[in-house]
Length: 115
Length: 114
Image (cartoon, rainbow over all chains, first blue to last red):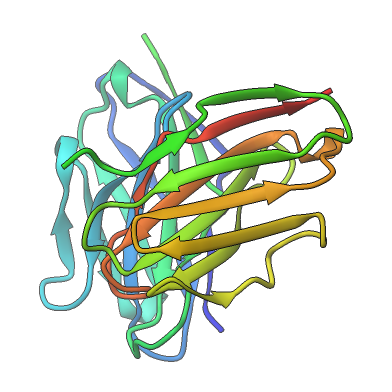
C-alpha cells in the first residue's frame, strides 16, 4: 500500500521569500502525485499533478513541484510567496496501476506568511 | 460546471439526533468520496464509491455512520445517532475515476454536535 509523509506540520515564511514544502512517498512503482491547497473554511483545490514525463511540473498560482524518483520525493516550491498563499497544503499519492485503489493524502503542512 | 455541491454548509444538532449530509458530484464523474477532517486526525477517507457502488468503507468509524449513493448524481452520509465526537468538517469529492484522476472537493459541511 502507498503512503505519503509531509514532515513539516507548520512552516512560516516572510512574504517575498521562497518556499519549499516537502513530501515523501512510499510506493512500489512510480505513483501519481498531487498537491492540493486548502484555504481556511474551504475545500481542497488541486495545485498540480504528476503522472509521467517531465519531472518538473508547473501548477496554478505560480507553484511548481519536482518529482525525484531516487529520493521518493515530490516537493512543492514557489520562488516568491504572497500573503494570499497562507493555507494548508496536502500532498497526495495514487497508484499508477489503476483499479479500485484510493488516493492517500498526507497530514498537511500549514503555511503562515508574515509581512 | 457548478462543481461538487454539498448541503447543508453548516449543521448544528444535539447528541442523539440523526444527521444527513448530502452531496451532488460533478456530472460525468464516476467516483465519489466522503472525507472527515478534524484538527486531531486531519483528513480521513471514510468511504468511496465507483459507479454508485461502495468500494471501500473501511474508514467509516462506526456502525452509526452509513453512506448511500442511489444514483450517479446524489450521495448521502448519515450519522445516527450523532455524538459530540462526530463534530468535524465533512467533505465530499468526486473524480472521473478512482485512482488516476484529480479529485474535486466540495466546500464541506461543518457539523457541530452538542
